[in-house]
Length: 88
Image 1 (cartoon, rainbow, N blue to C red):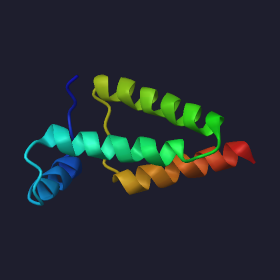
Image 2 (image 1 turned 120 degrees about the vertical axis):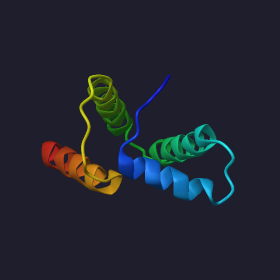
Image 3 (image 1 turned 180 degrees about the vertical axis):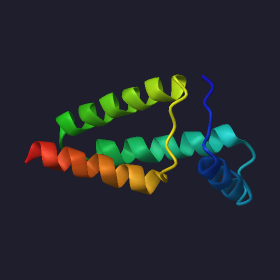
Image 4 (image 1 turned 90 degrees about the horizontal axis):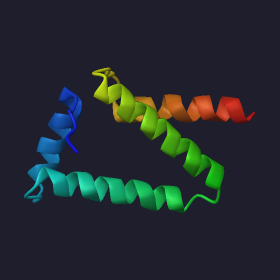
């Protein structure tokens, strides 16, 4: 699988690489493993399924060339706020 990174993600990856990682794929793998670890610590299977569906939507949008200028933290805050509003 190949992905296109935003300029912000590319800059972050370059900064992390200076900390001793030899391969961008290794950085991505560690980040994904941490994300899965955090998700699997959640006791809500429906939240995990919801995250998976959101990631699938994002992958489809990325394949279509639709990108956001928001940071990952901004996107995460928006997505979690929307989920909280839907659950209320």
